[in-house]
Image (cartoon, rainbow, N blue to C red):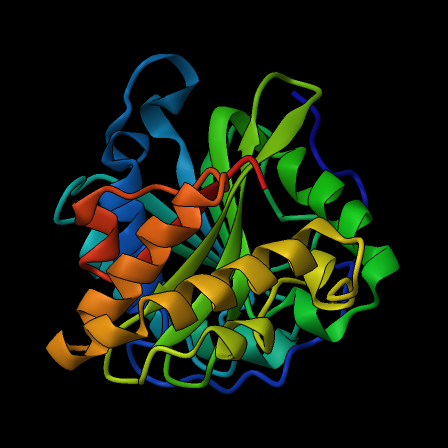
Length: 270
């Protein structure tokens, strides 16, 4: 399997600020979307790790994920990666035999004997140019096992609203974008336009006529307008009704209640 060879971390430090439980809904989504990815023990998955890229000034997101994911897999190994030496040094007192912190960037500091099942990179790529998106994905996905997953996106400061790409590694050389996921915790009002502000880097500059993401949002706004009468029953009901209407327009979005009732819209094969 291809491993990064460049020792100098590639990338730029993030602002590093985060709130407690900012990525809780991201973790909860993974636990609901594909719990088997966290528990697989076949072949190279037996001792494979989860990577939290860009955890910030303190390792709270990595440690919070460790707590959540280990309820499902107590033996899961977790690696927190930061490009800032001081942030890594501050995290090291929290390391143990299953939790590691290392200096690194998009060229992840994965050791030769280590395999990777899942990578989470949140609030990292938004500070880069669009031209940096594909090289970053190529470097990150190079470490994933076939069948492994990269979830990459952006959230608002408290994690109540986020959008993320799901990228699936298919074989040793290739992968594909599996879905674009939107998340709302219903403590905020449902407003389609708010999701545009936190789109991943590969979409944020493409909100123009003729682009597929533009058409998607125009259709979602129309669906929300046509189902606005349902908001008398609550934001959750309105969100679900709008998503079901959107599916009726021909977009491949999941209408399963287990997603919509929890505030997740999954657009498959975007």
